[in-house]
Image 1 (tube, helix red, strand yellow):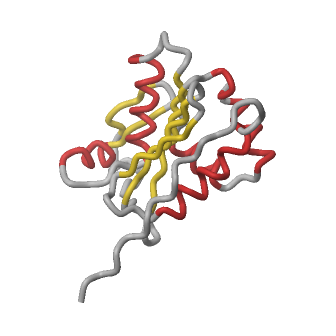
Image 2 (cartoon, helix red, strand yellow):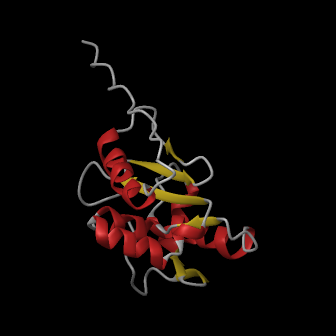
Length: 165
């Protein structure tokens, strides 16, 4: 949706995040939030709201997207660079598109709780396609599965009922 030109001026620059007017306009209607809006919010949570809470890690959407495309060895490297092993709660946003190019058609949030140790999925849709988020869920558990704390994965949701005639 954003066209990053002079016709789309910068509305806000906050640490590593830059929001354009087209990003901000997404907040004025029934639109899906894009990576830029989520990145800004995650950075705000990390740098302002929870800056004194080292137990929380907010992984930016673009980093989560890269993680979805990496192999297990690279994934563990990324998590170590984020210092994920020291965090008690890790938040992974996932945006999905049903067609190309975006905008997204739904989103999920995966929250890892190290104290439990469990991943909790939250979906923006009542009937989300489960394959992408569950694929990422199974991929992301690899770095967290070292003994003595096995990961307790939530069960796969049941498939949606067939459409009625």
